[in-house]
Amino acid sequence: MAKKEKNREGIIYSTNPDFEYQTNEEAEASTLAPAKQDLRVTIDAKMRAGKQVTLVSGFVGTSQDLELLGKKLKTKCGVGGTVKDGLVILQGDFRDKVLKALLDEGYKAKRGN
Image (tube, rainbow, N blue to C red; front, side, top):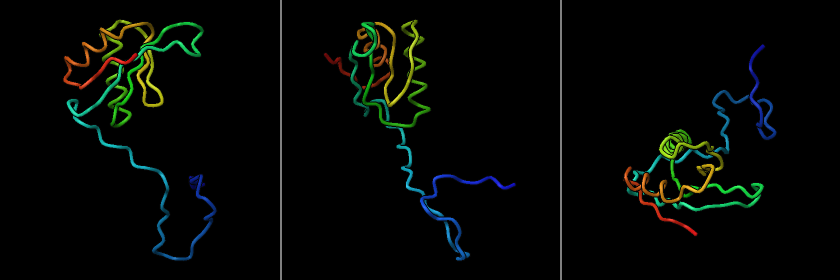
């Protein structure tokens, strides 16, 4: 049986031989050079049972490049963390260490509140 595509917004069948289904998905943005990135390094404890986390936001680029950046930062700080919703989340307060690592990599970064 053929693989069916989902989320076709009401189009079931077309008799037009030149018909091509167009999706509304946005193309992922290409990654900016590190010097053109404007990253913010902040700390947060909201909705995290009182535990502090370091957030890196403002990355413009592909999700693979963001994952790679998150892996580098987790390795440099020696902590766990995750990458989701365009943020790099590191367990603990590592603002200074993350900021230094980003600046050493050539990123334009600022320390937030």
